[in-house]
Image (tube, rainbow, N blue to C red; front, side, top):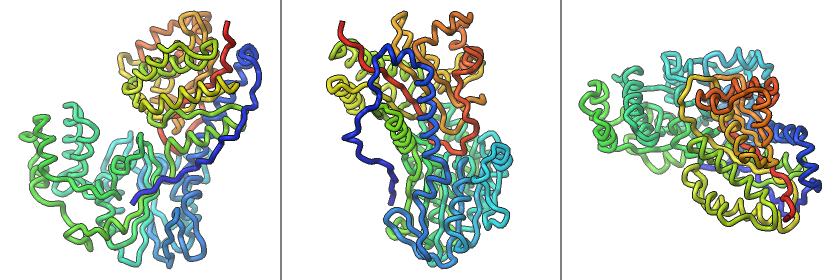
Length: 528
């Protein structure tokens, strides 16, 4: 069973506060940039680990409430977790359940406690009397022996639970690397080698996950199996487009039956079956080992013993940003929380949408609509979302709406052609800035792209803010944009442009629900 919590509420009768002209809008570009930053901050704040747990987990005496489900508390609650945001989630969960927590083990990134303390995130740290054991591992976001020891401790805890116990599982992005538990006799190195060779051969993420699950004790529902017959409640902070439960941290609480023939088919497709380690062949030729207490057959009531709830996601972050936009006097339109694909195509989409919104007259040219729809499949946005967005932008023109905030999120990709410093958010902002420059015809829009974890690539920035003045500004400072782009050096570009004032520098946020895109669009120009 799965649930997704939402913050949605009706805004049908909202009216915009911005009633200025396009000229006044252009004169206020600096304050508009501050509004974009405020909306990004609101998006990040809305998916903080402690706040999402607090919204989804409530205690009423000796009862624990999760959505519309109620669970009896009787000093019977155990807690495990794994992921980059899990430390903050665990701290808040322990504050809520109090003495009913018997014990807990969480697997978190190497150095995270020291980093959070250095950034003053004391609310995301456990107290000195905590009953939760913190184990660090997965240095450089890769499975390692420390993470494997953490996974074994988690497995040992859940394997001892009984039908009177309640297991609270906290999951966030990065959880897969922090929960490596290869089925013996496979070693961690052997499992990594197999998945690395598959990835190099061009296997899809679905194929990689299928093979990972078949070689793991805990992924693909293995953790829930080991916890049976205890009741399992999983609170999930999603960093995957569409929030597919079996993808987030490889689905340790989601039942996923993997047939050996399916796995062999994938390995043979990429010519790897003959060169597999003997340990991998041995595991694939026999059934998955049983955990203590786990039934040999998987009954329906095993699934009934698991509640999976997505408590934080990109969509929720966009809802929070939209609410902030309305507070700031802007009309909010959400495009999609699933924008993906090559960053160049994504930048082109935003360029076309800005042209659509800012075209003079009552109706944009019909060819713009066709170009936007054509880009949809390349950037992961469904046609109906594009039609809906253009209709909302069009309705705003006809009804006299003024300034609009277009919101989206997701995780575009960058083709690496150089050795510079940067990330997908900064490169997207740079490319959108060129789109807004319009080949000499500037579009008076402001665009922000930022990673909700506070880090974009190997840089200290989360992203950047740009507008139609960026290209002229760069030329005046002797910066060759094409050279920076070809070297994937967007961080250096924005660091040098106007002394780095366009960089987005929120610092470590303690959460991660992919990226947030904010585009502020001015009132449409009157027809000439």
